[in-house]
Image (cartoon, rainbow, N blue to C red):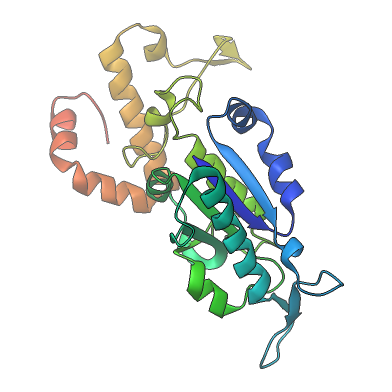
Length: 254
Ligand code: ADE
């Protein structure tokens, strides 16, 4: 998979992703990240890509020309290097606080793409006309406003890339973590067996796998109810029969 990041701060992206798991996967050629500086497509001698907003208002806006030219440069590169039709509409995610909240289902959908373009805004945003022309998905990482789209873009690359086979050390770990079945992950423990007077829950050292599964489900339910009542309500409606049976048999308490 190839990620193409349209940004004014390419070093921020590359420095952020070169570490840890993403860095190792990039080095191993499992996916690639190409951060393209939109300032290289400025059409004035000052390398400015921003200008005042029509109609007034605080702040500057990124102009449409450099954004479109960056997009076209990415398409030309894909044509030259990978024989992809230069007119092909690519999946372009615009990171914006006005977008749809990002979630695991979106990450899974994006992971199916061969090429994913991520557009990072800065200043007050980007001229609407070029967004209409190239953007396929408007995505927010939460109800707060950051200074730019670079951190959100890195989050999307991280969440999507860990779903690509071979990125995580063990393919299974992508499946069992939080959100895959609609519940938050249960608490986990490692050595030492006693820390600050607190013991590891007994069931986890019992070796009884079925009981461990029940305990983990119960903990996930408890945690989800406390921290994410929205997810909890959805889960208990969708899994009513299974949960009723487990409670009746005394396997879990709710
Ligand atoms: N750019 C600035 N704030 C953002 C947010 N919350 N999500 C995505 N992109 C952003």
